[in-house]
Amino acid sequence: MSEHSGQGVGPIPRGIEVLVKKASVDPEFRTLLLEQRAKAAEEIQLELSPAEALMLAAVPEAQLKTIIARTSIAREHRRAFLGKAAVAMLAALAASSPVSAPGGFPAPTGIAPDLPPEPVVSPVELRVRATVAEQLEVPVEKVLPGTTLPKGLKAVHGVCEQIRKALETQFNLGISRRKFGTFDSVGELIDYVQIALEIEPQVIEAIAGQLRIGKEQITAEKSLVGNLGVTALQRSTIRKKLAGQYRVYLSLTAFRQMQTVGEMIEYVVDTVGKRRAAEAQQQVPSPVSRGSRPEPAGIRPGGFPSKKMPAMSAAGGIRPGPSSPPPVKPRDPLEEAEQLRRQAEQFRQRYGRGQ
Image (cartoon, rainbow, N blue to C red; front, side, top):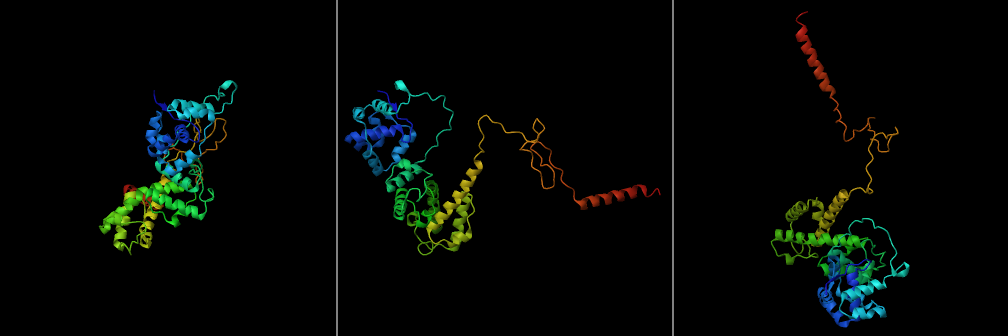
């Protein structure tokens, strides 16, 4: 039997929906799915898309158990999910989809417009969202990058502390309570974790190189002076190395005021994050509707001035457009006076002798 794709539409990917529903009625398959997720899809000859496989691998086991326990299947579809043919399960899902037109055919929707490709979800984002959802005991579909923290999720202080500790364990990162309290949304938390996973090892390596000790001896809570004995000269050297590596400005004053390794990591992560956000903002093109053309500046055919006329300069003139010749640089009055003096001297030398 040929393999069948699990690509689907809706908030839950179709392939994962097939696996979860089968696991809810088949105890042996449930054990296989929890222990070997990729093999479980192969068992029923279900081909997952790369995004589905990535999402399935990123869901924590406890969260997956909760999803399976909350899944229910209609009685008329249980036989399909008790078998081992993915095509029958996909057909059962299709049959359970609502049909809006009489006769069993879906209502015509016309030609679908060309849509931009769906953004690729990174593994870090999936793991952060799954961790937050697990601590809040809500479906992962409700935890989105735009979800606010803690107001939007109604998370009290104790739950926020559980999320912080769970993320530290999940990613082996140091996230201070002060820093966690600055995040307004899940998206900000995701961005910080992504950059911190890249920068924290580099900061620890720079400190270890200066102190000539093993990187395993350096942790986020270690004091730079009390535990590690970092000198002012070593701080300056570490700052210069990290600034050159990430092409950012790192304040020497800020480095001198840092007390722990975690504070140094947070400062570098914040600085690099701001620079990358500014670069991304500059690279985003202005939205232009499909088929539209930019209106040329100047006078419209009817003789009426366009809204995109070149702006008037402070001197009262019109700023040159892209095709205008370069403006003439004003001459220095002193240079003009000197040139006139030279011309007068040449005139006297040429015609003064004849008088």
